[in-house]
Length: 526
Image (cartoon, rainbow, N blue to C red; front, side, top):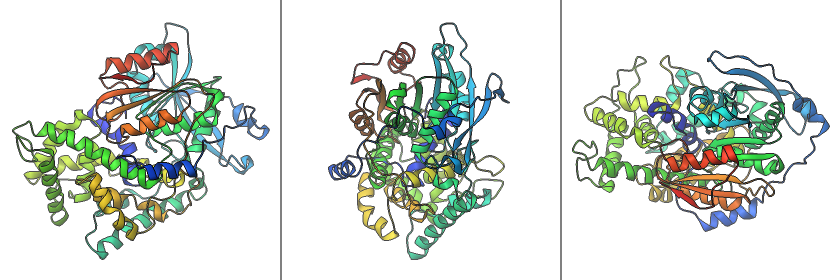
């Protein structure tokens, strides 16, 4: 999500994809009128909270953060508390990690601008320090204190942990396209072990990492920063978080940019199905580009997307039988599941297509290192074999936000034709990956719902026409739901739009952030 160059983009973009692959989270494809009407019946707009802060929450809203130097030059860090359970504020606290880079000037300070890279599970603090605090347009950084808070359960904010490094290595190797009952049982066992590890690590917190609670935390952060309204740029899942905030606190909603929007009205299965189709769209764009090159590893010059997809599927099938050596220090080989994730990771950004071609070419020569490196960037695995908590937090939030996409392997098998129609290349794997929430130790507390945010200031919703992870239709849907939305469209490939090379997109968003001037609804940029 956003404009980190190649590898960093891949790692950041991985945050959202995990929602689809490892949880009943996101997906892609065409809209189903049945799913849409079911969502409308099941969830009306969330009720805005009272404008006055309850007395029991005042100690949280009146905190004074003690800022200190971070290890990253130019940034300050602090910790604030939020109630573990908003319905029982005396039941305990959650510690939230904040970071900021103060406005540099010149010009009048406009307050704080919170940023979130998505996920769920992406570290907003890490994103601020590695990109937003130094890479956002200079005129924006001059006028705003750039601020990030890691959501509860994520990164520096009491992170959920589920498996150790070797355990995650085993988990990521698990075959997610089972061929028989034995392989199906192995996949279910892996999902159960992952879920049990999360439940054992954080039995109380796991019940309180929902997007609604994270949005309420952001209002506490807004207050302790001294801002009357929340100004915010959220990407990918961060759009769901921002829209949820607007639904809960419309009168406190300032300038919100929701880039790479999600549709909160869809149930988990439809989300997964639609994101599956989104990645097929992205693969088709990659395959067309590849087919114009003599060295295309999926068939050479002139190979069409359909044949390229068949060739890739055949490659995956070969890996299922014979994983490739990688030269990895821990002896890991390139399995079908790891190779699939490596390819998917590169779909987020057309700037990674060359790296993917090179990795696929090397794999044809019995070297799986390139695809393994792409998969490791997706999973945020470091060189020492440790994993960030991205995947753990991702599952924890997604499995709490929506009822599971599937309750059993039989339900997955019944849905396979729909998923394989949405994506002949990725459909089978995406369907099975959406099974994991069936074994989650905590029941979902959320449900699909339209978010309207009546009374909110203008909100800019941004969509990219060939976005793999958050299909463009989702941006249209969210803009249709939010009462004050202005839809801004980027014609192009890749995930999200701001800072990805479109002067039209960037200048439009900058004008909104700096002058409060929203674009005309329906504006399109290339």
